[in-house]
Amino acid sequence: MPQTLDPELRRALAERVRYYRELGIYDLYRRESATSIDVLSLTLQPEIREEMAKKSAVAVTAASNLVAIASNPEQGISDPIAALKLIREDLGDCTRCHLHKGRTKLVYGVGNPRAVLMFVGEGPGADEDAQGEPFVGRAGQLLNNMIKAMGLQREEVYIANVVKCRPPSNRTPEPEECETCSPFLMRQIAAIKPKVIVALGATAAKNLLAMNSSLGDLRGRFYDFKPAGSDPSWPGARLAVTYHPAYLLRDPRQKGEAWKDLQMVMKYLGIEPPKKTAG
Image (tube, rainbow, N blue to C red; front, side):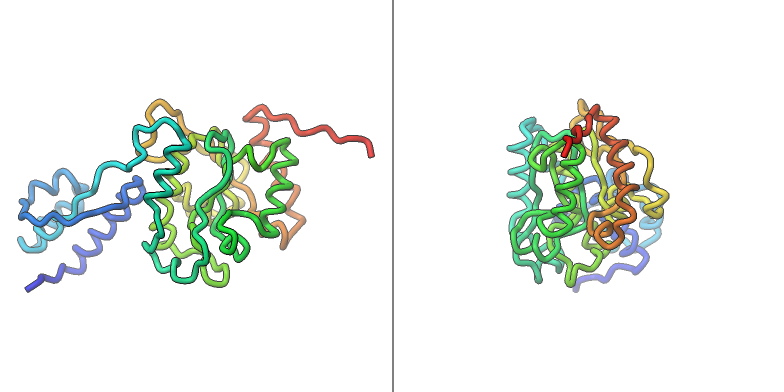
């Protein structure tokens, strides 16, 4: 008869799975052969391993049967176009969380695979869900204008979201949905290797930085950012936080503050804003 894991052990395992997902390792398989408690020394943090040692032998064996698959298919591929294609193929017709049940199209990402600047939003809306491309609705048009104001074109940057399926009624993605989907975003970032990432809105900022601070506290500075498992030769990106374009549509008074954030990015990248022509 199958054995039921102790609730404390189940919570410990759930934390460990979450830890692997933060590292970009999302696939797990169950090893059929019996293993000893020694395996835990390779896969579990000391505090979790110590807790498991107190449990029954059956529970310990069940826990040690969860082994992480070490690599992603795009690892070792230097061409970002090929790497992004492999990540998309790995994503497939994703059913990893319940968001897929209401989607029309999966929204992967769009733009220059070698972009120095990447924008990350929250999740697709109705227009994005219909077209399969991020930021194509009203908020997308505002983002396009923001990019143009920086002296760039949409095709020069890369745009993606934390989750790739539209949440019902455009609600904020739930933590489990972000945890399930964000490893693919991390892999996209590692493939593109941008110099700067701009997190659009609180959801993107909190998920990328793993910080629960307010948007106001997160704005106005750069953060060092590099997904786990990235190319060691890549120094990582600088990450800036600003308002989501959808929020700016609701409160246009904050556009000036968002422009300050973008000016900080432009200064770092050495981008000069386009000169205004006499009308």
